[in-house]
Every structure is written in C-alpha cells, then in structure tokens.
Length: 273
Image (cartoon, rainbow, N blue to C red; front, side, top):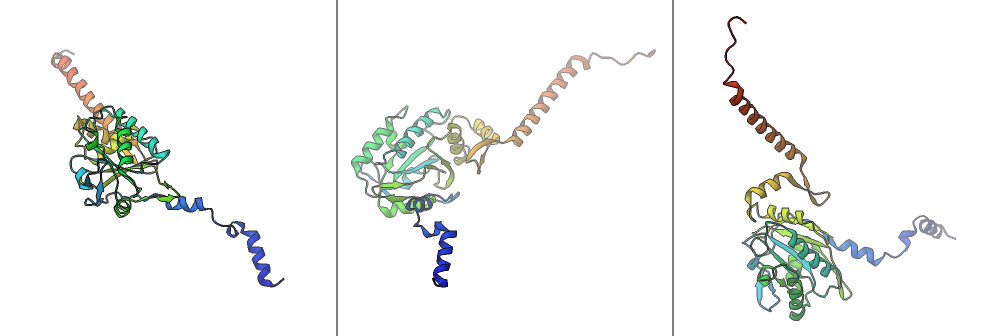
C-alpha cells in the first residue's frame, strides 16, 4: 500500500463524518430561519393581489396602526393552519386592543403559484375563527404575488425559507411592524403569549394604541423585551423604583395626616417642667 493510500485510510478512520454524504435535511435547516433586521423598512411599493383578486400594494395596509406580518402559504398541511388557529385564539385574549380599531394582520403567501380560490378559502376559514369577523378582509388580508415580490419582502425582514418538493420549509415567526412599515419586533413560535403580543403592538405604536395610553405607559415601564428568551419579562429595576416612589408618597401622606391630627394640638412644654 502506498503512503498516499495509507494516509487516506487513516483520515477516514479518524473522521468518518467527513467521508459520508451530508444529510440533505441538515442543509435545508441551515437555509431556513430568521435573520433579525430590527429597524429595517419593508418595500412599501411591492405589488400583491388580495384574496378577492384585487391588485394591492403593501403601503395600502400601513399608516393607521402597527401591523402583524405573517409569511405562510395557503396549502400548508400542518404548521400554517396551527399558526392561524393559535393566533386567532391569542388575539381574542388580548384586552384593551382591538383588531377592528388598533392594528392589522397582513398574511403574505411565500408560494408564488398560489391561486385565488385557495387564498379566498384560507381567508374565509381564518376569519371565521375571529370573535368578530366583520370587516376582516380589510383588517386581515391574505395576499399572494410573484416570486420577485415575495422574495424582496422576505429578504427585507430576514425571513429565510426553501421549497422542498411540493411543500415549503419555513420558520414559525411573526414580524411586528410600526405604522410606517419598519420592523419593530419578532415573535417566535406557533403559540404567542397574549401579553407578548399586546406589548409588542404597544411598543411598535409607541404607546399610541388601545383604550388607555396611561396603561400602555405603565406596561412598557414594567416589562422589557428579553433578546435571549425572546419574550417580554418583568423589569425588576423599574418595578423597584416604582415601588420606592409609591412608598415615599404613602409615607409623606402618613406624616401629613399625623401632623394634622397631633401636631397642631400639642402645645409648648410648661415652664415648670
């Protein structure tokens, strides 16, 4: 055996993984995911078609409140239906903020071969799960478009997907946009906590949303987004500061009451004392 052949045998023995063909599933998983682009602006002029067949642009849904952008496809057999069902349930649990008044959901299909009938059916099916489906076509449109439009939108928000056979591999994430169309927050997973959804929408709207601006300010003071845990968490430092301020106010009130009750009735000490 030559020295060259012997060296190859040793390398294969020591590093068997390098001698095996790469698993195609691993390559797919590496291509699918999210590259967060906080502060990035989506292309407002991108053309799409809504579920009724009307040409629209993304700018048509911006300007009157934050937008929850979801990228899915309408023939998805499992992940997307679960996501839509979970999202409608979560939205119903969010108090003080209404889809009909305060924000929109915009769903865009990543499949450029969508047909109007399927998009319409998916829109109707999802809207029927809302507590109040009146006006849902305008507040939660289901859009589809060309491969170029879909790709530009996905790239603008760092959303990576890949077609695998007849299906698509894609991440489970919702992108929260400001009223102007900039990326404010990413919410991960099929089930989104109602508190996280509410806080993300309040944050994207700079507090100008819902029934109580004061309540929004208090919530954002007490909670901050944890980039590691990908959730909103109680901010202990602010809570301690608020608790200290409340304690000082209560103490000042107590001293004032004591002074009013006893301070004025206590006379000067007697001369013979």
